[in-house]
Image 1 (cartoon, one colour):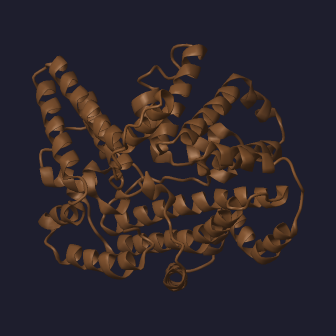
Image 2 (cartoon, helix red, strand yellow; image 1 turned 60 degrees about the vertical axis):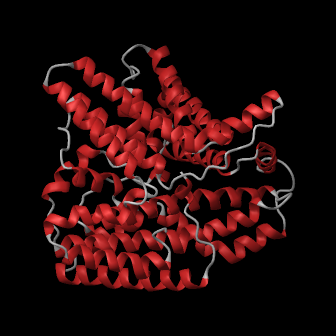
Image 3 (cartoon, one colour; image 1 turned 180 degrees about the horizontal axis):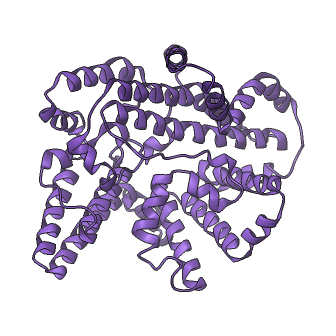
Length: 455
């Protein structure tokens, strides 16, 4: 059940909100746990016990015992993730290499497993590091693991960022209103922009021989689709979190405005980048052990980042592609870009991430190679190009403007001239309009995927 479904909007969310606010405060965490309990009870109990054990050994000064329990937590979580996510992938590759016919297990990937596995691991690691005390209330810990607002597709919420909210949050009408408005904006990004761009990409990617212009329009369509899809989901998750009194950290900061790939990855999927930096890159040595070691660490992190996104070699290729770009920037390219005009950096970065999203979108290597070749060879223009530009130019303009900070800056400038009451009223009216239009689109449109839902 995704946020942009009518079932969620018209049934689950109203029911959850009503039950949450009529429920006594002491029982609200238990209610949040019940809402999501069917998804990962084992992970909750497993890392709750590991956290207590790590805290116990640390209190006794037995670092070896704490380290052993941390290893149990990390290995156990990765084993569960690896089994469900990569077993069939490994079998398929083994059959290809050895000519065997081992049957695939046909495992269904538990929804959100890549996200909540990283969350629970971050908890036990932070307990081991002494950054947070072990949570002794299993209901509070279970509510953290199973919070439905961000369960399906992130952001990855580290325990230390919501530990206070779990026990001391205060729900207020202004915060709930702000949260619902943020949710609606995310819904609009998803339904009105991401879905429409996704339909364009789906049509173009299915063409056998698109022209160069059409192929680039398709690549741009997917570029916009994945941004509005995932940032829209993050907006909805953050908004629902605020509605229930939680303050999730931001996950996007207008990444398509970046001037370097390094900057892009500081702005895109911030929670994932932060997780890999804190729990993989820095423990490997980060940039503290010389340039050669730093470049190796970057390669390892991005190989794992690609693999985290899916059990397919195109995701690994995507990760290696970004590792190569980041290594080039670390060694010499950043210095050159700093001296170049700003527009040069923007063009370079845009080309990098548009091509990167093509690698991300197409899992079949033969189809991927064919599509990449169409970006640079063949007829420059065809009737499809003209048709797409004539029919979808407004959507493209809205997407270009919508992925920048321009609308926010214009609104903030205008808001300075308005009274608080009028400003709040306009925000509410705008949210209602976006909600009604989005619901209308949902009722009449069967194309409504969430790209990060599969991870």
